[in-house]
Amino acid sequence: MLSLKPLHLRLMGRGAVLRAAIGECARLDADAWERPFVTRILLRMRAELRRMTGDDAFSKEIEMSVDKTLDDLMAESEARGEARGEARGESRGEARGVVLGEQHALFTLLAARRLSVDESTTARIVACNDSDELRRWIARAATADSIDAVFG
Image (cartoon, rainbow, N blue to C red; front, side, top):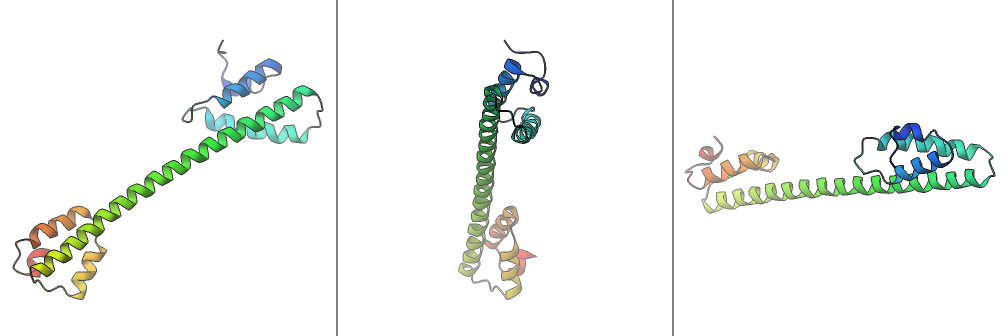
């Protein structure tokens, strides 16, 4: 049966209530709103348990449960963070690859059209990270009679 008392309050309980609350912490969804709060409580609890000298079996059991739960919570959070970082990196890499491809296409088209590209125009193309702008330049370059018609 699920208790109606909030999890963070049950973590201040004793005996079976505390044992059940720690178990519930371990089963929290990764995006549960309680997760940051109970993680802080468990960190504090672990520090206090290590400071105490309780040799009874229950104290040892609770300390081990808190340690395992914290390790699991931290490992899951770390894995989620890595996955988000990888996804962002892949997305940025893909976007950068698209921009580089469009820059290359523009240079190729300008050369094929025999439109002279000076240093400042080269720098402008290389500095552009806006895919929409690069596509506009490519479209203009397809029919332009001069470099000014492409970038003007």
